[in-house]
Image 1 (cartoon, rainbow, N blue to C red):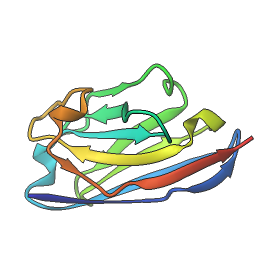
Image 2: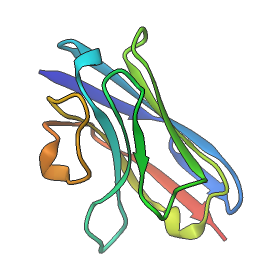
Image 3: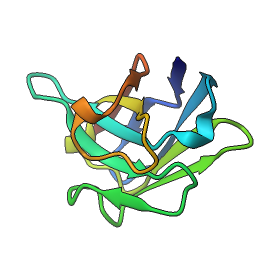
Length: 124
């Protein structure tokens, strides 16, 4: 089992930045690919970014590429999402997820453990 707890969400103006954190506990963290997903009101949950178990491979949704950066610190059992140049359309609940594989995918069904989510609101 892996327990995930997100933090760092909040209200920010368009063009601003936030850094989300996801602290993991439980089984070995550095054998899990990690990802961030988000869900806006009335929309389906969508993939945002992922990072491989050892941190060497990252992948982003086109909508956030160049603005968001995913990283991890396996010594701290934590994964981060640095979000810059935020837009109102980035407003959503952001979830971190862990897969029982080294690289993960971009479908939510590929992830086995989920956090409770953290709200990000970007005002125009």
